[in-house]
Length: 158
Image 1 (cartoon, rainbow, N blue to C red):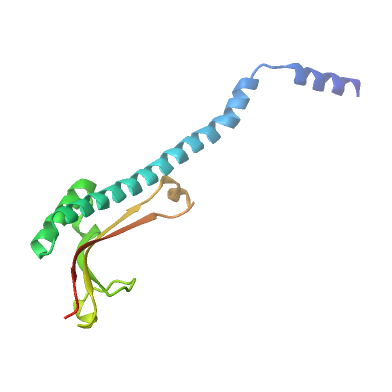
Image 2 (cartoon, helix red, strand yellow; image 1 turned 120 degrees about the horizontal axis):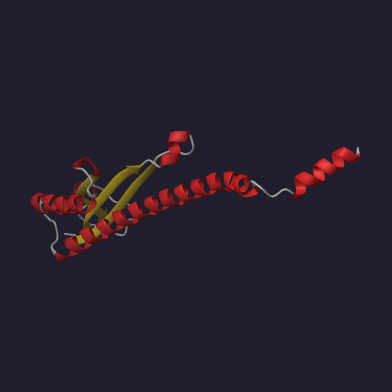
């Protein structure tokens, strides 16, 4: 019994190698936290980039209303150039709102002639970001969907 106590006391007082063991325990956790923080910052940065591009497109639409298909194509190309998104991820279309309704329609004929019809340009950006942790079965891809409506005109009832 006395020999066992002496061995435990000697082990408790022996400090050689303690730093290596502590580092081996703590380093993987710190590396994972750092990588996670980097991935989160990439997710937030992409969302901010898409929001900024939608804001830029809204400013352009306010300065020169894209009331023709050619102008909407130019606006789409500007957004694609600023975000690096392919053509299928950027949509610039016309939407309408009848009177004070809160929903949009994509066909002006859905409004009757007694209603005020407001026309909007609808800017929609979509993207997918796949964080590294999905490779290990944790979580899933992040889907971005940024939609911005900018009023470009209003017609009074006839």
